[in-house]
Image (tube, rainbow over all chains, first blue to last red; front, side):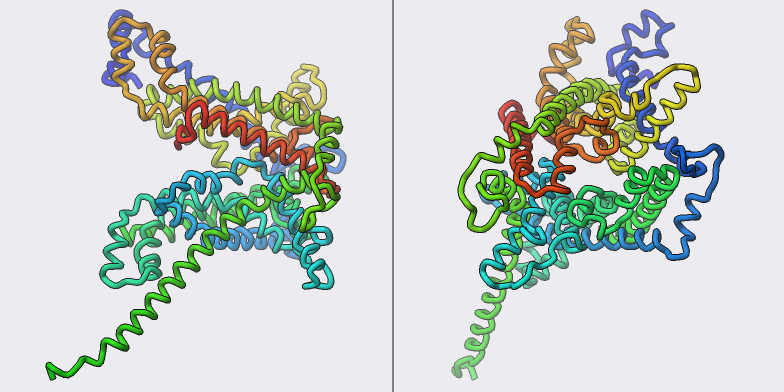
Length: 307
Length: 297
C-alpha cells in the first residue's frame, strides 16, 4: 500500500514529499471504513454467532441453555428414522432436477438470443430479465392462480371444456414446486449462457456446417462444449439458489413438499429451536458446498480438456 | 459408361430433400421451444394483471368482465396500504445508504486498494454470494444476542430493539442491496479515462473538486442505475423481511405472502399488479435517465 509507484499514480506524491511523516497514511483509506465496518459488524459477526448458536445447548423455556454441545448435529444426522437426512436428500434431488430442467429450457433460448438479429432483441432480453425484477411472491401468486387445485385457471378451464371430470392436483406437490422453481431461476441460467455463447465466434459454426455437420451435431459438438464455462456458472447458481429457496416451496408446495429451508424456518420460527435450526442450516450449507465442489472439480476438468 | 445417365441423382435428390425437411423440422422444433419458454416466463405476470381487473372472485377463461373492485379493496385495506408505504420507505432509505456506501467503497476498490483489490471486491460481494435465507437467520440470532449482551453490560434496552425494529430490517436491506450498487458503480469506474482526473489535478483542482466536477458527472449513470436496481431489490426483498419483521409492521411482499397463503381473493392480484407497476416505473426511469445499458456487470 505504500508502494511509491502507486502513490505517484494516485497523485499524492506532492503531499507525500512535503510531509514525509504522513506518507504511510493515505486519507483515501477512510473511504473503505464505513462499508467494511458494516459488513464485519452485520455479516461476519452474525455468521460467526450462528456457528456458536449451532453448538448451544437446547432449552425449552429460553432460546438456548448455557453450555455447549455437538448434540444438535448428532440429533439431525443420527436420527434413526433418517427423517432429516431424507429431507436433505430430497432437497438435493430437487436442486439437481431444477438445474437440469433450467439448462434444457435455457440453452435454446440463450442461443437464440445470442444469435438473433431481430430488431426485437432488446425486448426479448427484457422478457428474460423481467421475472428477475418482479418480486418472488408476485410470481408465485401468478402460478397459484394458474395451478390452483380447485379454482385454478387450468382446472376450471379443462372442466368447463369437459376434458376432465375432477380437478387435477397441480399444486401442493413436487410438480407445482418445480414449475415455480424453474420459472423463477431460469433467468439465472440464461444470462451466464448468453454471455458464454456470445463469445463464441459464429465462424466456427459455419465451418462445422460447411464441412457437413448437421445443425444438431454442430450444437452438440461445437457450441455446447465451447459454452461450458457459462453452463458451469449457470448450473451452480441455479442449484445453490434452489436448495436455499424458501418462499417458492412454501407457497406452491405447502408443508407437503418438505425441503431443508422450509424445515429450518419451521424449527426457528414455529418450534423456536434455534440451536437445532442453526445446526440444520449448517448441515444444508456443508452438503450443498460439497456437491458444488465435486461438480466444479469434474466440470473444470472437462472445460480444460476442451481448451 | 460415360454416356449412360447417372442413376444416382434421383435418390440423391430425394435424400437431400429429406435432409432439408428434417433440418426444417428441427429448426421449427427449436423455435417452438424458444417461443414456449418465453410464454412460460411471462404467463404468470400477465395472469396476475388479468386477475386484478377481472370482475369475478376467480380468474376463469374467458374472464367475467372488467372491474376495478379489487383495486378499491386494496386502497381501502389499511394493512396493505400501510405495508406499501412502509416498503417504499424502507426501500428509499436502504437505497440512499447503500448508494452512499457503494460510491465510496467502489472508488476505493477501483482506485486505491492496490493488491487488496480482489479480496476486498469479493468481501463486498459476500452478501450476494451467501444464501439470503442464511443471512436472515444469522442476523436474527445476532440481534437477539446483541440485545442480551447489552443487557448484561447493564445497558437497558427494550426487547426486540434490533430484532423487531425498522433499524434491524434496514441494515439487512442495505447488506443485500450494497453489492448491486457496488457492481454498477465499479463497472463505470473501470471504463473511465483516468487522464481526465489527472488533467484536473494537474491544473490545480483539489481532490474533492476533481471528484465533484469530473469523476461524479462521469460515473453518474452507473450510480443512478445501481441505485434504482437497489430500490427494486429492496422493494421485493423477502427472506430478510420475513425473519426480521417487527410485530405489526410488514413490508408489502410479507403482507402479500401472508394473504395469498390463506386467501384466494384477487385483492392480492391488485397488490401484485401495483408492485409490478412500481418496478416497471423504476426500470423506465433508469432507461430514461441513463439507458438500461448502464446496468453493466
